[in-house]
Length: 67
Image 1 (cartoon, rainbow, N blue to C red):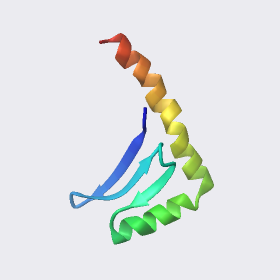
Image 2: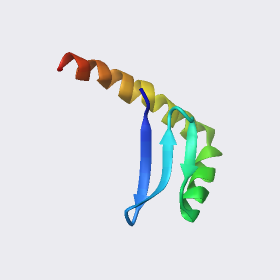
Image 3: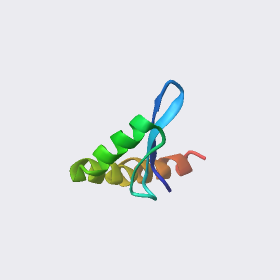
C-alpha cells in the first residue's frame, strides 16, 4: 500500500508526496521550492508519513470487506 498526495496548479503536477519515497518531490520550478521547504519541516514530513497508517491501512480493510 502506498499513500500519494499530489498538488496541481493549472492542470500540472507541482509536487508529490509518496510514502514509499518518504519525501516530497517537485516537478515544476515552484514545486521544487515547495518540496524543499516541506522536506525541511520534520513535523510536517512525519505527519505525511503517518497518513499511510492513518488513512490507507485503516480504509483498506473496510474496502476488502465490502468486495
